[in-house]
Amino acid sequence: MPNLVDLVRWKPLPVGSPATGLSLTADDGTWIKLPDFKGNLHVLLVFLRSLDAPTGEWLVGLDRQRSRFEAIDCAVFGVNTSRTDALREWRQSLGVETFLLYDPLALAARGYRASGRVVPLCRDQVVLIGKDGTVRFAERGLPSPERLLDIVSTVEGREPPPPPPPPAASNTTGDGQLRTPGAPAAAVRDVTAKEALALLGESDSPYVLVDVRTRREFEGRRSPLSRHIPVDELPHRYAELGQTTHLIFVCESGGRSASAAEFMTSIGATHVLNVLGGMSEWSGPLAEGP
Image (spheres, rainbow, N blue to C red):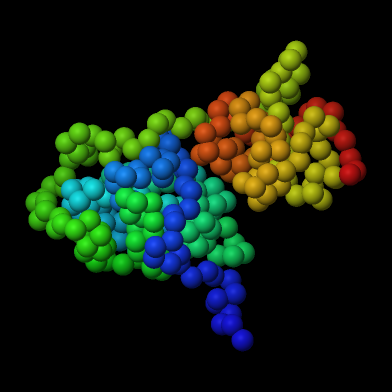
């Protein structure tokens, strides 16, 4: 009989397997797309389960080695399911410069088997993707920064420079490329239910209202203007909307719809709105039933 842990967790991707797609928003608002690095840089993805003190201490240690990773052509990113504002505040509180990527619904983590099979949260795991776009190293947990440097050095075929003396290295590299790793991602704009109704009511309005609640919630009380895609199904069904621009997301109170909106911007959607207060604040016409 399989071990119970194996039933709820995947083993890391095997070395040599193609890296799965990744397109996420960094905490500074830039849009990180894995294909942009292929042929130029190794990418070390550090999936973080939580933003607690021990994890923060480990990340500080990793960040102190950032310039050494960059010297051997390796970009380093942390990945977590917390929203960009929370990631940015945490990074600033730690005083680190390593970018943190927002992984809504742990979609990227699932692709790298760095998530539980049931709960959409990241698990502590590191994955090194080579310049050739294949997995060169993958391991659960958070290995020491020195060990990770050794692994990248072996893959690259050259040694990193000596550790920089204190204070920490400048927040830019010589050419600035690693500090600005992607194009700016579109920002999600929060709107009230009244503002959303006004936009939807405009003549020839381009906006689509997407309700991301459960089917039971949707059938109990909904806007007749809405299309229904539960939040956990959005990553696989967003193409059904027929557009990736001018989208308004709504749930019961605004939390799940915010995650859905952030996910859409992470794959390049623009003009994406989130209804604050959700259906609990909705004042427009309502429908019930299937």
